[in-house]
Image 1: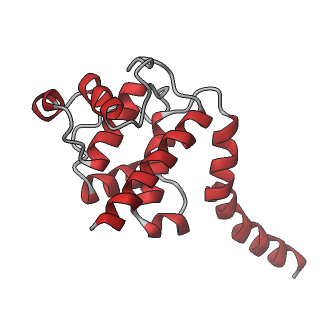
Image 2: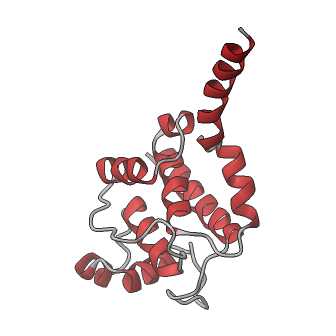
Length: 156
């Protein structure tokens, strides 16, 4: 009887160890020296899909969610690839549907997405699209993105 109850407890606890709690995610992200593409995708998914808060972070599901809700085509980066400003700018520019940059609208690449984010005052002009993004930087930039979305909603 004791073995059965121990096995039941183990089976109930093990899936929870793999689940990524959003609070734990932000805590870990704040300490990262370099964020990854997977971190940016999970963060963006949390802002787009409220259901994502209740499920474990699964990179493929999150990417599929973003492709469904937003125009996230051809993001062919590895989950563990270090995040740079260009990759983050591409996510942000597509998420906010930035149309400030004519070249971004034409070419839809990291370089011009970065320029569009600078034009929208999300990133600083001193930054480069090849600069690595820390966890704290990712949190700060995504906070600005969320504020911009809230202002858009208020203005409608």
